Every structure is written in structure tokens, then in C-alpha cells.
Length: 223
Image 1: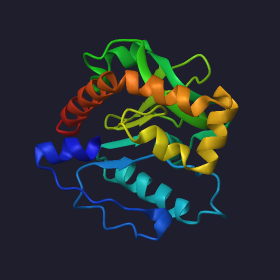
Image 2 (image 1 turned 90 degrees about the horizontal axis):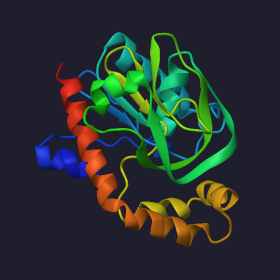
Image 3 (image 1 turned 180 degrees about the horizontal axis):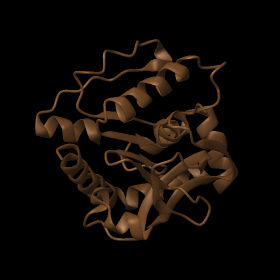
Image 4 (image 1 turned 180 degrees about the vertical axis):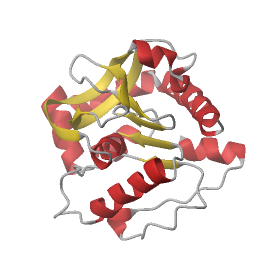
């Protein structure tokens, strides 16, 4: 979804696949950093040594350079961990089409301008932010997860849930063993078929919400 939106606006972007060995580039030319999801956990630095460099790059971009940032799922957790917060294994995987509720701060935040509450979203995670870093504000929550979205400072945001859903998302992620296991644990043996149908039914809503959030993110980035 984000690539389509960048393309429509004529923005150039670079994709850095750290798990495939891509080096982190010099950050100064970039106006926005997006850190997306993945099956890794933020504390698995021995298994995935590049997580150390990634957290350092996030800190530099957000704290030293004070440039706009959006982290989704693992990216949300990495933002919290990089800035001094804590991330832990949740009590139960949160997987499926669910709702999140904006806090009063979230309702007033420019990232969620015009989006309303509650929001229907796709969840697919087993870890969660348990303690926010200083200068961070909770913007959304759910019954199972107290930090569904947060802002650090004025320009850095984390979303635990997914907004970037396409028609291929469910099947692509279900092919990843860790994701498939969490899906079965959360929704049972027929989970894939159920989730496929739930997402397909709401694809237009997901796309509209992603466009709204993207438009708001652009305004935040240009402040």
C-alpha cells in the first residue's frame, strides 16, 4: 500500500532488507523512515545481529535528526525498544480482524485526523510494548494490548496493528512459519480460511483508512 501511495505522489524510496544483508545507508538524504513488520523479536540480537544497527539507526533518525518516522508491528516495537522502552511476549497472540480504540490523545493527534474511533484493523503479533520510553504518549489501545499506537516527540509514531493490507497479505504472511503458528493458536485450525474471508470483506475499508493515515502522515512530515 505505501509503495503504491508513494508512487502516486511521485516520491522516491529505497527498500532496505536487513535480514537479507542490505547495509543501512547514510540517513541524511531521507525525509521519512518506515520500519515494517517481521517475525523477529526485538530482543533477538544474537540470532539477528542487524537488530543492533537497526535500533541505532532509528535512534539517530528520530532523536538526533528529529525526522518523521512510522513503525508498524515489529517497527512499532523497535521504536519503543530503541528509545528506552520495554517489549515483552504478550499473554496471547493477537491475530485477526479486530478493533482498536483511540485514547483522548489519539483523537486529538494529527495522525488520526478524521479517522474516528474505534478503528477496524488487522492484527498479527505475539509481542507488545509493555513500557513506553519517556516523552511518549499512548494514542490507541485494545482490550488485550494497552499500547496499540504511540507518539514519541512530535514526529515519530508506532502502530502495533497493520494498515498496509493488500489482497495478498494474508496468504503471504501465512506462509511464514512463526506467523502461521500464531494464526492457528489464536483462531484454530481453520484460521487461514476465516481470516482470508474477513480481510477480503474489508479490503476497501482497510485501503481507505491507509490512505487517510498516509495523508495525515504527510502533513505531520511537512510541519
